[in-house]
Image 1 (cartoon, rainbow, N blue to C red):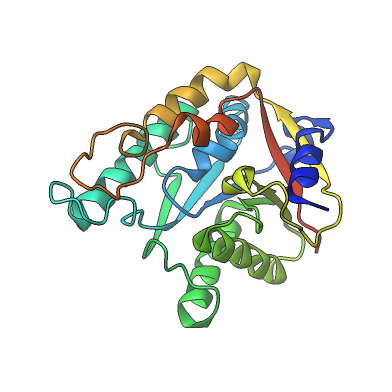
Image 2 (cartoon, rainbow, N blue to C red; image 1 turned 60 degrees about the vertical axis):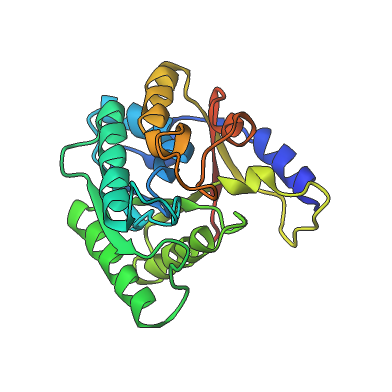
Length: 246
């Protein structure tokens, strides 16, 4: 299948419910960077929180790579800003006060193997066990970003230790793949979730990531900022979740 065919198939996934995705149990969302959880699963988090279900977010990297040349926001200040943004977004979505955890791995250098990878996996496993999570969400392995791909590998390693956990993937940067690119994948299986009841809260939570959505940090010519085009896939009425086969 081409990337275009795959993405069109994802957009046409059958409608599902929160129960279909997570049942009545706690769940964990892995976020490669401080904002991916809001973009890809903010509606789900808000809907589950309204039902009183526990959601835990684990942010894998420190986010310091978004504006590496800023003088007004050097590395530590930028890390602190991005953590504050995640927490502000989480409050809008209904996350508990202590429901965001940070692994603090360096942005753009999340490991795919080795001792740091193993330590990250063990930390995620420990969190899943602590909250008795039955479902784990992670960015799709087809996202063309090294940290997203590394995080997907972490999730697969977690499931090898917790074989009963259900694993779903949510696309972020894959929405912008070259549609002619060939993907050696089977037709996607999964669900789309109607997030209309929580859309306004998700939009507000996205806006809470001010450093990524505005010119707050304006002294780095290479600094990252979402554009109308790059943000568009996350402002629609649905979120999309792909089954990750064992």
